Amino acid sequence: MNRRLLLTGLASTLALGGCLRPDYRTDYLDATGTGSIGLQYPLAAGDRLRVIVFGQDNLSNLYAVDGAGRIIMPLIGPVKVGGGTTLQAARAIEARLRDGYVREPHVTVEIEVYRPFFILGEVTTSGQYPYVNGMTVETAVAIAAGFGPRAARDYAVVTRETPNGLVSGIVPMTYPVRPGDTIVVKERWF
Image 1 (cartoon, rainbow, N blue to C red):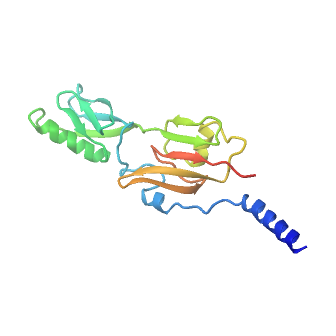
Image 2 (cartoon, one colour):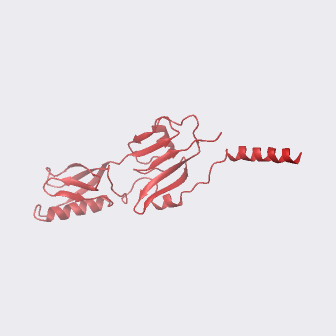
């Protein structure tokens, strides 16, 4: 009798344990910044920048940040912008133009297209998608055509690149997504 009671209790504990969601762990992700993209957004490969050089229409154009974190502009060649902000990129371009090309350059840099985000796991169409400012994990799932039939619908795992390496955390569906994030929607147990 005791053995049957013990096995019944163990089976019910395991069955109910599979229904629980893990605790949210967003501490490391929160330290990288959340919410809509601001002035502190670090530029990286995949971003497309609109560079405006006032009075120099032939230099004003759209430029893609390459894998080395550079943009290549006519006249001055490659300029390192990866890891910096748009303001730092503008100052770097101004410094290069000031070296014998333009007397008093005034440069503005804006982000035309953010780098994409990635969504994997239990979604209908996993893959790479264009980032939309202000999006959450829930809107990322909607962009990926919704949940798969066995998806855990109350949490996901977000992995984000930081200057110190990759950081991952278990997050609620309302958690903000940043460009370049990888979202994994896990499979539920029951």
